[in-house]
Structure formats: C-alpha cells, structure tokens
Amino acid sequence: MLLAFSTILAVATAIALLRDDAALRADGLAVFAITALLLALTIWFERCYRNPARPGFRDFHVDVVEARRFIRRGTHGL
Image 1 (cartoon, helix red, strand yellow):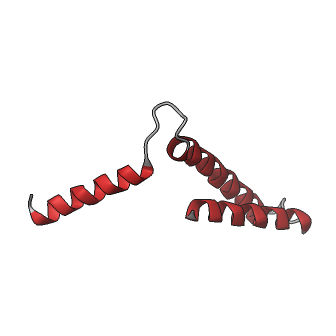
Image 2 (cartoon, one colour):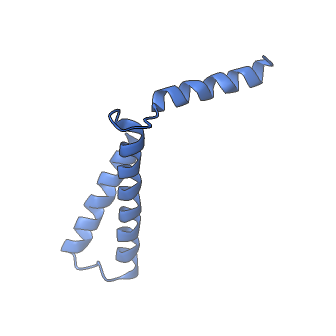
C-alpha cells in the first residue's frame, strides 16, 4: 500500500513539474528518474507478489508469517 501511494505521489509531482516547465532542470530530471524507478518497482511487486494466477506465485502474507516465526524461534531459543 505504501509503495503504491508513494508511486502515485511521485507521478503527481512529475505531472505538476511538466505543467510548470521545470522538467528540464536537474531537480525535474531527478523526480522523473525516481518516478520511473518507483513505477517499475510497483509493477514488479504487483506481478510477483499480488497476482495469484502467475506461475511461481509467492504469497507475501506467508513470507511475513514465516519471518515472524523465524524471529520468534531465534529470540526464544527454540
């Protein structure tokens, strides 16, 4: 959820920079680079973790539960 929200915010900022003609400055180019990176990361995450029809699907919830169990066993010495 946080990744999608930050991507939407970055896209909105990039669109606002296009309207202000600030896209050619260094900060405008940095915003576009960050936006492209976040968009690619969001698309990758959605394809790998959220799409159950994809072969080789990994359930993100199961990964979190397994990590919690691993930490719990490590802290309690089991």
